[in-house]
Length: 135
Image 1 (cartoon, rainbow, N blue to C red):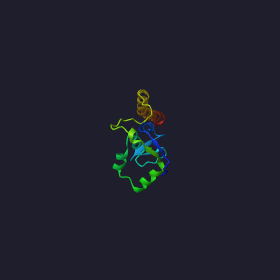
Image 2 (cartoon, one colour; image 1 turned 135 degrees about the horizontal axis):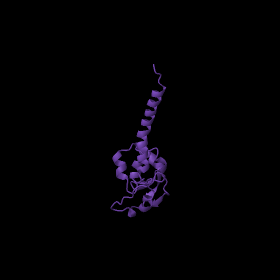
Image 3 (cartoon, rainbow, N blue to C red; image 1 turned 60 degrees about the vertical axis):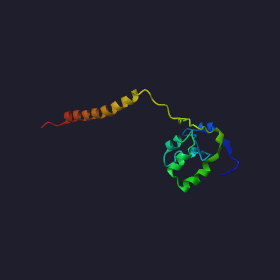
Image 4 (cartoon, helix red, strand yellow; image 1 turned 90 degrees about the vertical axis):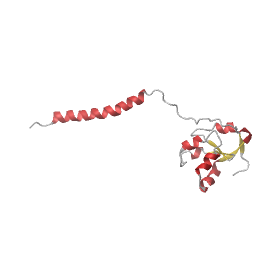
C-alpha cells in the first residue's frame, strides 16, 4: 500500500454507491471495489449493501480468506477521516435502475405467454382436422 494515499471524508465515500462506482470503508481504509463488482463471489448486491457506512463488521462477519484480504491491497485508495464518520448511521441507498410503476406491459406479456401457446395448439388441431384423410 502506498503511504501517500488521500484522506477521504465519509460524505465523499458515501457518494460512490453504484455498480460502476463503488467505494467501501473497511477498518478505516477506503477501497474502490468498482473493478471487482462482477467478480465478487457474493455478487455485486453484497458490495452495494455495504456502501454508505463502515463496512468493517460486514466484512469480518463473512470470514474472508487470507487471499481475499491480500486482494484488498490493489483496491486501496486511502483512509477515511474518522471525524467525518457519523456516530449514528444514516443509510444512503445504492443507486438502482428506475422501477417500472406501470405494470401494463408486464401484464400483457404474461397474458401473451399463456394465450399464444393455446392459439398454436388450437391451430394445430384445426390443421390436423382439415388435412386428415377420410376413410
